[in-house]
Image 1: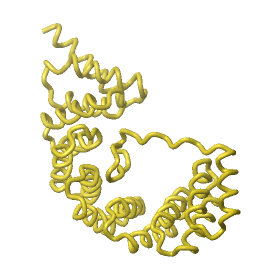
Image 2: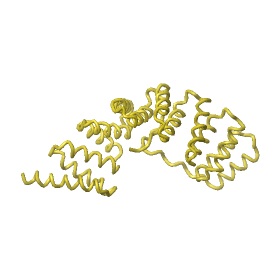
Image 3: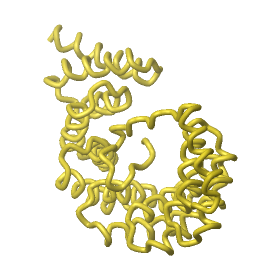
Image 4: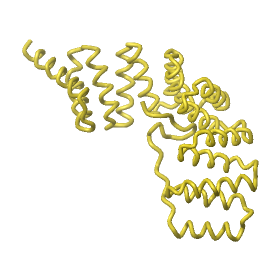
Length: 266
C-alpha cells in the first residue's frame, strides 16, 4: 500500500502537483534578498525552499537553520527544516524539528500528521498513534486524517478500527480515492468480498489505470467465484498486466481464462 496522505490536501495519491523547479534567476534574486537583509528570517526560509526544490538539500538546510536561529519561534522554518532533514535521511533531526514546530503551533493538525507520518516510517507506531489521534481531535471532519489513522491502525493490527476510519473517511469525502482503496484492502483481508469489490470499483472509477488497484479488484472477483464476474475479471487483470507485468497477475489471468473456457463449454 502507498504511504500516507497529507492532512487537508486533496491528494490521496491523487498525487500532489509537482512544485515548479526554481530557476537560476529566482535563486539569484533570493540570494540578493538575503544579502540585503541578512537578519530577515523569511528571506532565509524562502531561499531554503528554492534550493530544496532543485535538490540542494544541504544548502537549503543551512538556510532553514539560519531562519530559526534568527527567529526561534518560527514554526514554518522548523517545519521546512524537518522536511529537508527527512528528505536527506536524517530522521532524528527531522523529528526534532517537527517537534519544535508543534511546540510553537500545538493546534496545527498538519504538523501532527507530519510528525506522525515520520514516526510511522520509523516504526514507532504507538508514538505515531498519539500524533494522529491528536490531529483527529483538532480536525475530526478531515477525511485525510482519518485515512492516515486508518492506515496506522491497520499496521498495528486493529483491523476493525482501521475499517471504521476508512468508512468514515469515504463518508466525509466520497471522492478520496485512496481511502476507498485501503477500505477495499481491509475488507479483502476480512473476507468481506462483496464490499471489497465495491471499494475497489469506487477507487478505479475515481483513479482509473492504477495497476495495483486493478490487480486487487481482479483478485477479489476471482475469490468471490461468481461466473458472472468473469468478463470484468478478465478485463481488469489484462489491464493490470499491461500496465505492470508480473507473474502473480499472469497466474490469476490464466486461472480466469481457464474458468471462462469451462463456462463456455458448459
